[in-house]
Length: 271
Image 1 (cartoon, rainbow, N blue to C red):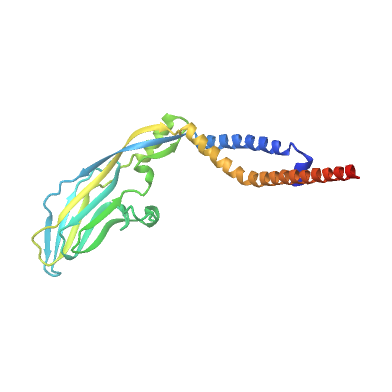
Image 2: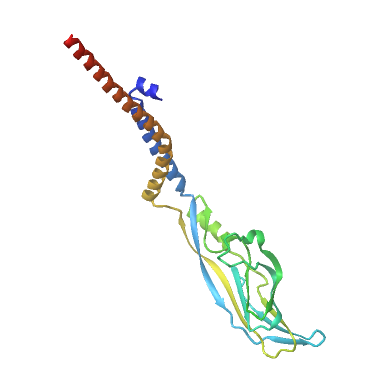
């Protein structure tokens, strides 16, 4: 590197010019890759329904000494996404069942935000009946009609134009969950006369808006420029270090040479 710089004093200028050119080209490439008019973001309008719970059907089975409480709650199956069940005032060794003939996806970790490793697509089970045991504490069962995130909480589609993207977004969202009736059963040990407390909430999500995906051009360009400059700095800094070290050594050698020449001249003058 030292020899190359010594033989070609314009090498540093060439490297800097080439680096700046590559930085600008790669920055534009990174920015261009983040902007595509073919991608569209759609939003959904979620409507929560807190169902009014009627008096349950009570069945006491003397043979097993258990009391079964049952509720049949009609739900809106149009674009039904979430089902939330909370049962409280339970006795020891009771069982809570969430039943839907069309089937629901559920897991004990579903809806728990603290567990980042959980994936419903991999761990949720689709069953017509989900059962949880209780030792007197409240029970919560969260369930989905589908683990596909495109059906809820907004999403992204690819389309040739906004009309095409709108059709695709609606196709992803529109769904009719049939039959939609939710049955809740609670089985308690012993002959019980007071029913547990039940809360059932369902969520229906409709198509709301759609817009082309875009980013702030200035911000994205600056981020891309900073990233590329950082990459090239790792390559250029060692080269510049060698160059300046060579220049410093050259200057030091020149000073020594001039000093030696001066001493020779002074010696000749004295003689």
